[in-house]
Amino acid sequence: MRNSNSSDPTLLVLSSLADGEKHGYAIMEDIQRFAGVRLGHGTLYGAITRLEEREWICPVESADERRRPYRLTSAGRHQLQEQLASLEQVVKTGLRRLRHA
Image 1 (cartoon, rainbow, N blue to C red):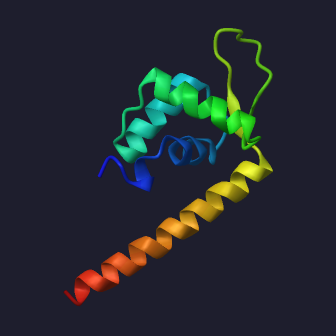
Image 2 (spheres, rainbow, N blue to C red):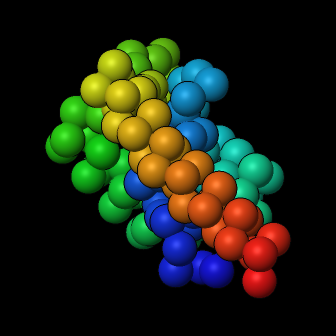
């Protein structure tokens, strides 16, 4: 199911940042743990760039210049809630239909 919304890099990064600030490698590791999806560096940082452009995440000032943490913005939190609600409806419908199949 690698092409589903549940493996969309945007959704995964937003979900990872929902519980706090993380730098790129920590985001990648978190996604691997909770979703079983291993994002490549290009995919991860492409998603981070798009999310920053949409102002759904923003960088956080850090003393460690090598690692740049990111955090979810209020617009990003709202977007994540909308995406998850949509997925929840698809899951509920699919499970209900399977019970009747």
